[in-house]
Amino acid sequence: MGLKKRKFDYDPSGLRTFKSITQPATNAALQARFVDHTPLPEWVNHEDEIVANAKKKGIPVTFGRRFKYDMPAEYNQLRW
Image 1 (cartoon, helix red, strand yellow):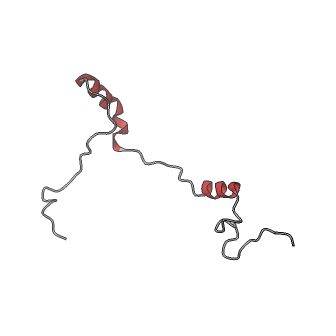
Image 2 (image 1 turned 30 degrees about the vertical axis):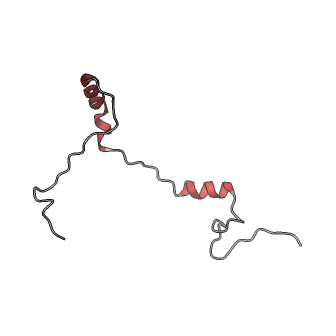
Image 3 (image 1 turned 135 degrees about the vertical axis):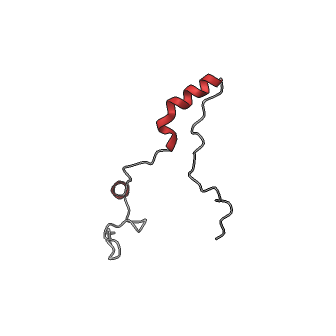
């Protein structure tokens, strides 16, 4: 009695059953759903300014900077 690869009715790709999955099939499924954009932090456009400011102050360069939110003055008084 030989073993044969089964395709299931609930998933024709065979990716939902670990016994029938292959690495190329997994890679193809991941690539099909791969996000082609990565959100960037707000400070990326100001990177040179951040580095120059740190060097001027003689401190180590750190990633990022404080984000300035547009918040109403009474933001901490609001009740839900």
